[in-house]
View 1 (cartoon, rainbow, N blue to C red):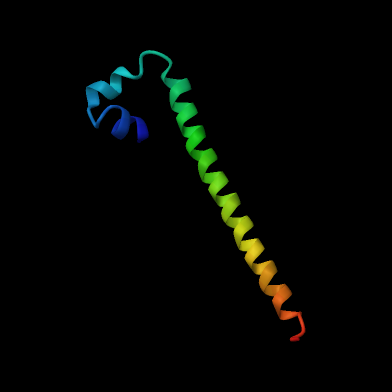
View 2 (cartoon, rainbow, N blue to C red):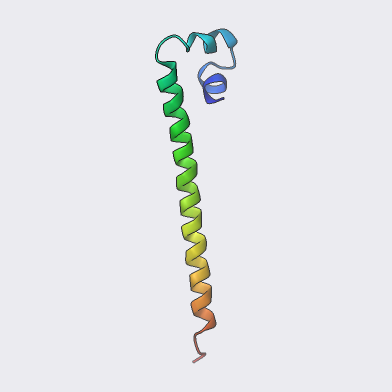
Length: 65
């Protein structure tokens, strides 16, 4: 989808010309990078949520001064 809409400007003839030279490697690399970014965002979100939940748990067990 990235190749079709962004690289070839939604033109079918330009998109089909990308299939000639190394298209598999280029498509795989772009797809891999997109999945890697999604995974990193998910890991960061999970770490932030864990940090916030751990902070809330420590606040519940502290005595008021």
